[in-house]
Length: 304
Image 1 (spheres, rainbow, N blue to C red):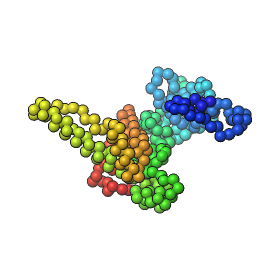
Image 2 (image 1 turned 60 degrees about the vertical axis):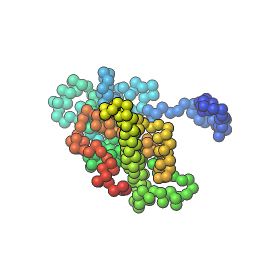
Image 3 (image 1 turned 45 degrees about the horizontal axis):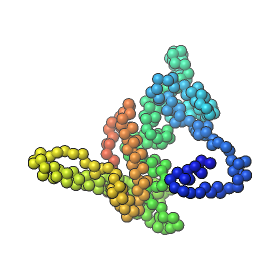
Image 4 (image 1 turned 90 degrees about the vertical axis):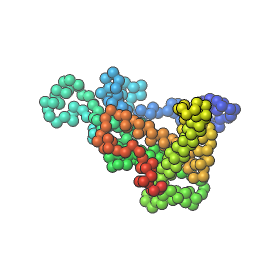
């Protein structure tokens, strides 16, 4: 009856159950399967061992078994083994020197401890698999592109609009951003569309609007207080209903989904903030340019 309750929340409506009542009552489970029992437990294990809580969370095996619907212990063990193999965590069993291992076991017990790499993975607002890909891309000098690609891969709808029932038109739109011949090459087209939007609208156009707004306010301020300008905050960067309407029209002209690109931009911004504000800063990140290549006009030609 949950759907029935949602029906009248905003307006009058009806609920249509498109299956026989007998099947609904006798064949479908009464409760959903707990998500934790379906999970690989990679994110849960890494999140526990990297937690800054005062609780003793360095033994994820025992803590996860305290859950109302605990995962299979074998799944937890496989998650720990995977994270160990990836270099994200280490345990006493990873210490090859017998004396050192015995001392750690005496002090800490059979604990799982995060490495510096694991701390960085845990700090990112991404799954473990996506965070690994992002860090690998960052080491290759493709940090922003990798974050955007992972966000595009996980987000639906995609940045480029899809016209239902018109495959030729869809192919033409994709190839207008990037001519691909390789498998999964459409993701590069979506990346190119996002880069075009982020540079042309989100950076350049909104910056020009902000400058105009500031100049207008400065002119009004000068007329009132003489040569002394009253510095005021400029609201041109805010997403007002007027800005949103203009944004939707701009995206429509360029065959871009306005909701998708804004969501992807939010993922990129949150990931970059978490990465640069983390407690650990690898050498490659210290030397990385925080400005995306598509916002450096000298390095970007407007397409992939």
